[in-house]
Length: 185
Image 1 (cartoon, helix red, strand yellow):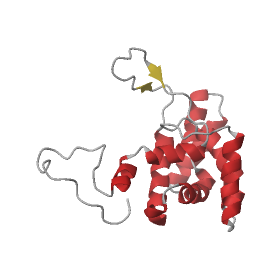
Image 2 (tube, rainbow, N blue to C red):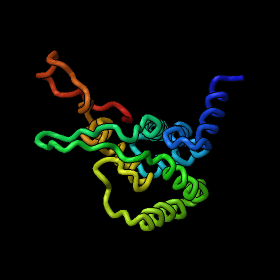
Image 3 (cartoon, one colour):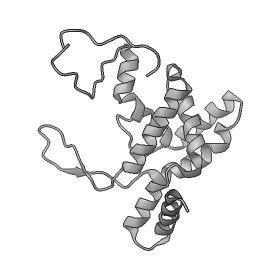
């Protein structure tokens, strides 16, 4: 028996137990489960075409890791001058799974109009009009988009340069502009 299979069984069993902290972990650990293809198809539709399929799949994988590593109750950065401490809300993984399930048939359709209409309908039903500054758990479509568009990768693609906004280049070479972009993000 493979370790992955055993861990999968454990995660499934933990979700049925009456311990809420284990149930939350089990929902997060199984994301995106059987909907990995739907998540990748969604990423292909809502992220920039310049990324190509390999790039959108990579972003979808990073989003999966973000959801699995999400820890409810963790302290959130409060910012300079704000003394009120805040904590992360509960994990959006369970809601994401339901939303992926509802989008799966439409996103697997070969007609682009059907796919786009399904996304528009889902966002209208959730009353979402604007892209959040960061993933807020309201809908997987906008959370995936904000996850990407607030990233260093999106910044690099926008300026067509290897800026690496969230990294540190160090002092050596700081007098030179960032290298020009070669290929997809």
